[in-house]
Length: 529
Image 1 (cartoon, rainbow, N blue to C red):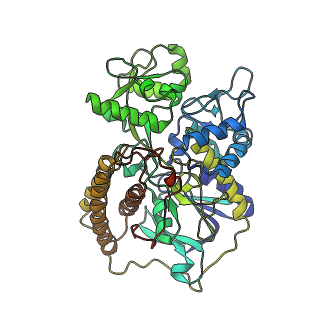
Image 2: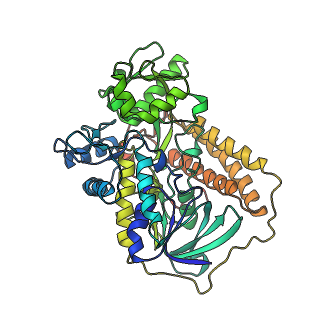
């Protein structure tokens, strides 16, 4: 049994931002599944969207976010995030030493990405997330009030509803993946900063840790989740089997890169007036359409008309990665395909990161604040983690601990070590493939119904396995992945229109009747238990 003031599950920009601001007010324990650096933040290439130029305006950033969000953004949240972003970005540079790129005059060098009407993306070459993660971890490790538990994975949240009556969250069961011991961690505030769920799909830009753990735990605990049908597919992932879904940043198109077919023909002008800089949902569907009509394996991102020295200086990591596979972006177009990238839905929160459960917060990609609506504007993700990590830390100062009379410890019962790990592997592969084929960029009622039937059977197998065998990290991830897949399917089945990232052939047009969030809570109607 370990007690702390603030229990943070996750070590990306949201979790670290929270920890650094909460530490002056109490002890902080950060739980992270792998190394502390391993998060979606680490792999973010583009940057942070914020109004940092006199040639830009707060109103334009708000308008771009609302436009891309297709009518589902919560406008008050959009205004708040866009307004608070510039101050927090400057703080990253000035207080934490994040090495953002600078222009000749010393101001931030700003890039433009899809859906933006101006240059407003502050970056550190093409490894912005890595630089932010580095700087924040330096600060976290220097603060003796913060403890980081690496190779630890949360199993489930501890709630008063389950263990004591009343309401509120007071901790989590956590698996130490080195000793396989299950620990009980108790806190006066619990923060979900677990990131996304890209691994629910066969092809994704996300790291292996992105298995939807926070959404699954919150749903099981009784919190509302929303808008999980809006899963963003990044249009340009390197098409190279050895590259393991390496992201080709949208910033390349912002600097003049053009999408072309294998024959070198441009095509985006047929789909959107912004052409290759159209919003991500439009570009991903356009590429999907071109590939299905042509039978080709990929389209190409052509940078060869740009200055070669500029490309190497601006995008050194992408240049070197492509070169490893024999692709010189200075002289050859880059083969690209869409891949699952970002969940716009998540655990429902307010403007301070508070969930339905007292003392439980959700921040970053795991949360549904309303910032992204039906489609996320490029580089608003790191912005969200930064803004709501700070806001949640300020609010959590006032959290008053709740605890049951007797604190529960983990009980394994008659569970034994498994000799059937193949069950985990088989179900993992099957979930990711059925989600890609049936719940991907383009959907139909028939595909969704097939996916629903199959994932219910898979989840039944997982439940039986979970109760009969001792928990492992792989089993916990599979359990969470299957539930999140089920929630995505259920959310998609309920939305009878096409809007933003949810496109279905059965309802190909936007319908204002559906201009509302898709909300699921355990026990409400036919949603999965």
